[in-house]
Length: 225
Image 1 (cartoon, helix red, strand yellow):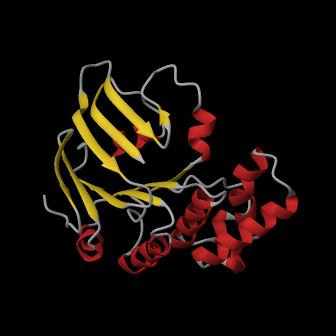
Image 2 (cartoon, rainbow, N blue to C red):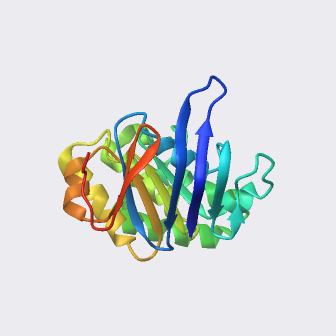
């Protein structure tokens, strides 16, 4: 579960990114964060990752209170978080297998376990034949599939995606969303997006942000700005 309780985030120069935000996201929920640029969507994701601490209010992620600046269980938090970025953030000097396996190698998992896990997620995202290719050899859609595979490997239970279809054509965008749909009811998924067609068609829970405030929280909602 993720709980924001009266969360405000102000930056040193005085701008307020979030103002008194409260919501709860249950385990295995599927949520779209929508709103114009600067509305606070990415700030919410970064607070969940503890890249930022809130200026006031509290944030719970699973059983962890991550609100404090001196929060000391960052490794435990991020072990349960998978993050997908619009610009992929794939390591160009490593092949697909190595990119996906990296987080498990950091945890000193066995070679056999890593191989099985990587092969499993490559099947799920639909590129099992690409594992020895390098990023320069892949299309944008294939790179995003690698990013998703990297985010979900290791049984992470919360997936955060920041504009995951922002650099993709409509057909590829829908292919990527079908991957997220496969993960439905298995993981908590939070997607920040401007893609109104996807939001309106999928009819998931929608949190609508405007100027740092939560304007609407709707089950089976749409891109209602």
